[in-house]
Length: 76
Image (cartoon, rainbow, N blue to C red; front, side, top):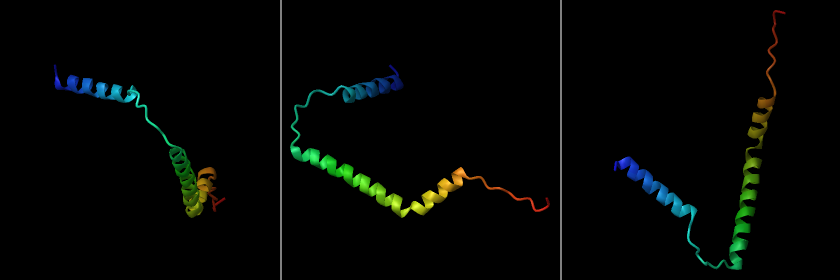
């Protein structure tokens, strides 16, 4: 058996172990839900802050994307 074939088989076995994990029977306390909610809100606020800081650059990029420069020929 070649090394590449062995490596491929190992890769698929590891992938299968991640795709079909055994049952964990774990307990999620109520604090976990509030922590996930807190992360979601922090991400939204962080994204809003980044947009606020870079708004002029974003607007200039979008204006440049949707407008075409009209070249005025001075000879005409």
